[in-house]
Image 1 (cartoon, rainbow, N blue to C red):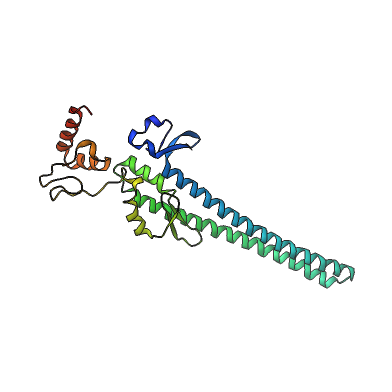
Image 2: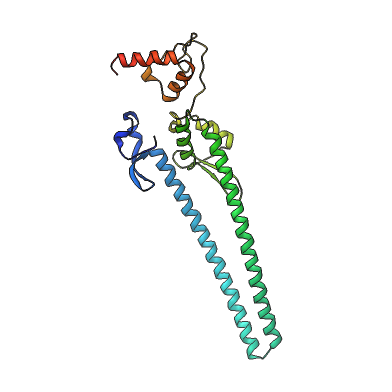
Length: 246
């Protein structure tokens, strides 16, 4: 659960990680990690927009200067009754207008293609990483988070990854893959690899497959894995949990 209209709907042990926020026009509470990523994403978009606006302004200024210079030449040709020069200037203006229209059309088409490829690359990465989820709901939540953590530059087609604080990570795809498993934000969403050998293993299993942890000490990923691998043991722990009045 990453967004809830009521804080009371969030499990008590997770409420400290939720802050007031707005999602799809609704006011409520959202995980602070997701909020941080969303803010970083918007900030980066705003910066990029300012750069593009500055470049467009410079191009417009240069075009204006060029047109002004040509108008001065045209006026001189008129004053001197230089018909040949007048025709040359008009021909240049027409040729430039045609070339500019073609360039703009080609650039726009290439930009659209690059943007589409970047979106496809990003979608493919999200689809790959969300498979770590313990169930379909977890996969959907992971995809929502990763949408704000993964960027693909349309110009270079290079991936960029952000951490939970919105800062760029110096990792490649495989490195980010490994980092996901370490992030607390995904701790209850990702299916951990279970080890059933060795007493007191990392996931609480002994040699006979008996869980050493109590029901309430296991996270959702461990409980989901236990239910799948050993339903009887899951039921035993759950019954013991309820018999103790928890």
